[in-house]
Length: 190
Figure 1: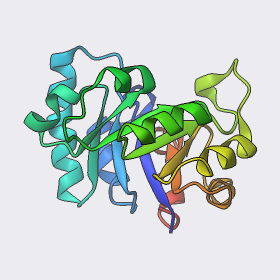
Figure 2: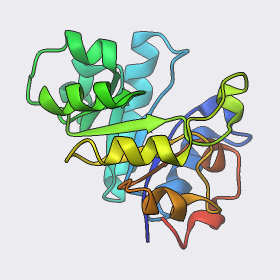
Figure 3: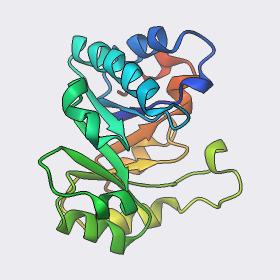
Figure 4: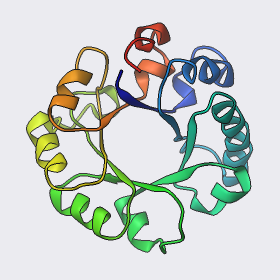
């Protein structure tokens, strides 16, 4: 059983997003990061309210992406932000994760109170077609640099999640596998 976070992109779903999400949260994942960058603030808030309900119905955390201002009003469990946004945020007691791309960034995130970091991209992924993956050695360096949980992102799937854990990560983040893949593949490992 691995600590797996589902990162959303509803545009990848071939079926109704909320119905698919309800199936995903039943796989045993740890939490959902609602990452829907194309929505207006009001559209995002409306969707977040629905996603929070689904996640909480199954005892899963719902983390909003880049919207710390609506965590409280939606009932979400926290926020995930970029390093630049984290630097601008005030420590307001919100459970916060930060996307990091270097040892210096993860150390800074930990120093200023991040609850966890996501490091990537580790493996080749369609989301970053023109960028070379950073690999497991990079992930190991990140994991050995901080005490807070580190989650790997980028091309994570059932075939490589174990190597991510062996590199020192707490778990992995999966987008495509959940949004358009066979959800039942993750039933055993999530």
